[in-house]
Length: 85
Image (cartoon, rainbow, N blue to C red; front, side):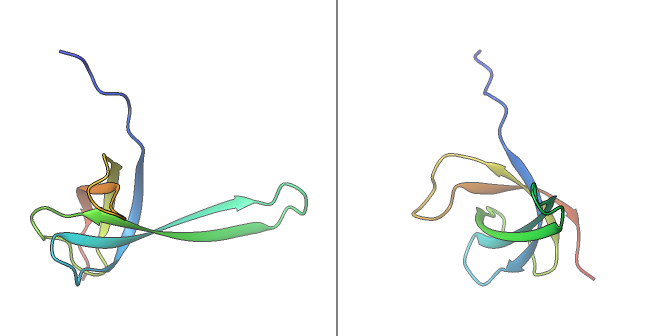
């Protein structure tokens, strides 16, 4: 059996769960500007597939890269790291 290549994964917070079997996950990353040395924070939103519809707003989730599932969905929810209070 052929093993799959390593897939990208990100950890982020669910910001919307209004769609059916889909969630929007905001992934924050920070880096130091190469010239000026200032720390820059960047947020990016990903649309992820949530098969069981178990993610709620505020949950921290790990998303995994997958094949295109729709026009905007290229990620799926791998696991719920922490549940929202």
